[in-house]
Image (cartoon, rainbow, N blue to C red):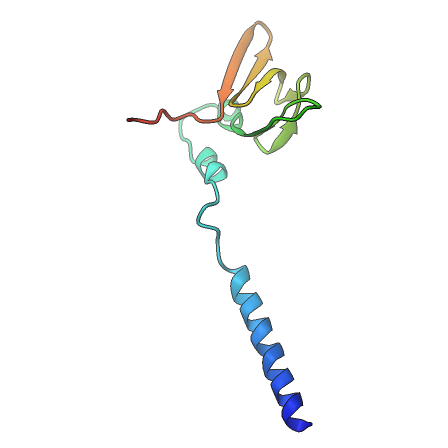
Length: 110
């Protein structure tokens, strides 16, 4: 009976130790979009914040995440109106000018 209690106590301690160490690990596949958008120098604050982070294509309508805010067509984000959402870009309107945010800003070289 005492041996059974010792084994249970050891098992509980091991499980707690593994869960605590797992919380401190970081996902190596996590995108660095938040870090990259916050380290841009000599630009206007509005241009830095307008970063397209993801697009969700749904039957009920496409959604996008811009600067951490989920938006759909017709919504406002930092003074810009969302007028179009495609699987890889979002078009914003402010006054008479349109701005296209692309999901993949970098060109892949072959």
